[in-house]
Length: 315
Image 1 (cartoon, rainbow, N blue to C red):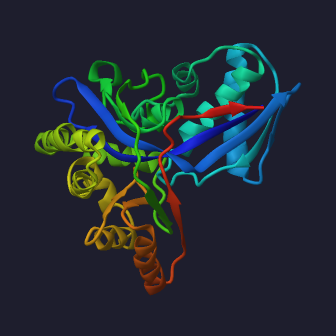
Image 2 (cartoon, rainbow, N blue to C red; image 1 turned 45 degrees about the horizontal axis):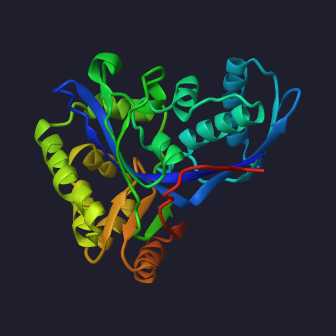
């Protein structure tokens, strides 16, 4: 049995102020490329096949949680295709949901993505990864009750929190360019420290962000208004928690975004270093390669599009 899971870009968290009783909320897009592809079958013990030791370890730990939950002992899983971890593409959630869904299908047990997220401790901050896996497309989630979550924390420190509901979903039909440069990979304790240091975000920023999302970004998706959508993306980089995330990235990442914004639309996905851009792919690629060469750094430049279906399972 095989499962194909999308990556995702995370455009922004919405409310890290929490003064009206909810916190987090997120905006993002599921992607066709890069993707996670796994195949698996029943086995007497847990066997994970991958060239990447860290991914093998993560899949082993996820498998153990799911197998314990359903009362089984083993599974064989081979990684056929993956994408960078801790780079702003949502690898952790896709691994958890992909492995959990694969195992539950192998053993003919019905587990929803939301159940798997709770078992594996995912979705405690952003619901975009679960939405990308389940539905695909452009997504907005509604965050969490501040009474339940009781603080500003990343997903890695929010185990047991009820995953955020998807409150808006629409097909996304514009091509995207992903730029994955050498940059800072922020996760774990460092990520927790950042939330503790910079939250709560000023209420004025949250209000501007909500205004932009509700009255410009969402209508732009529905009306197929490319420029309105892009203008909001550019503005988001300078307000709220996204402003914090961008300020903590490398100077090269910040330079790429600011340079691209002169003629295109561009933003940082989650903490990065992955950048997404909208506009002519060849022209964007040329601009980025020039910056790479100037700083003598390497990176991947990928033309991609939205995954508007979510994960796929087959034999």
